Length: 307
Ligand code: CP
Ligand code: NVA
Image 1: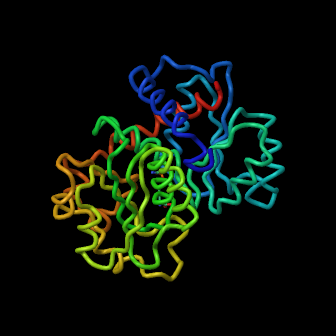
Image 2: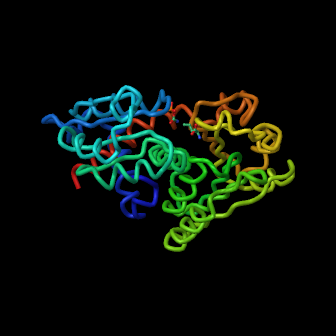
């Protein structure tokens, strides 16, 4: 599970149904009892992903082996391929948060067990499964709904929302300033997937507040993310001024659909990509969204290991 379109629409629906069942009966599913073990490796910081995988694997009856990538031999030059071969002799799945997508592709190519992307520079598919679960809880469905993401259209969240949202039959609009648009290849893949599901995928340029308001108009779901992702702190780009029109605030929400849902994967920067009032207000589903990481990942691991 390296990117969101590794699940077909039918497979994604199975995982999301399982996530809802697990949420309703959190300790009724123990497919990892035996016990099976899962390695969870972090090359970048994490709060939600680290704790939700560790707690979730334990709740499924398994043993989580949480590793700081810098402490492993991987961090001092052992190859990804050799790490994959060795870990596959000990554990039943490998979950990895790392940088370049080529790294996790190499892990998957050499592992004998499922490999799950816990965030790379390109994608964050576990987050988007939780986002879709949250949208179903708040809106009753995903298919046919419009989701507008405002912010860095070239980051992992924008790319995963494109692929995962299109897989769920959503109309995904990525609204971002010049120079921060999605990878054209990912946009094309999202359009291919949307052609099968009745959804759509579009990228719009936000050079003014009016453009941001137009992108958000009528959307049932508004999403944002940090303007500076992990690893981009020193990239020399202005990651503030061009993004200001994208800020999610009351004016933007007023033009969205009635009862729109506001999502943010967290960590958030109140006053930058979203106002404190909105993040902490009734339209915000961010705490449910964070909780659903636990249920969605338990469902994904169950699905990967049982089917
Ligand atoms: N949303 C998310 O992935 O959070 P962490 O970086 O805390 O894991
Ligand atoms: N785009 C953000 C997501 C954090 C969960 C980052 O990569 O830092």
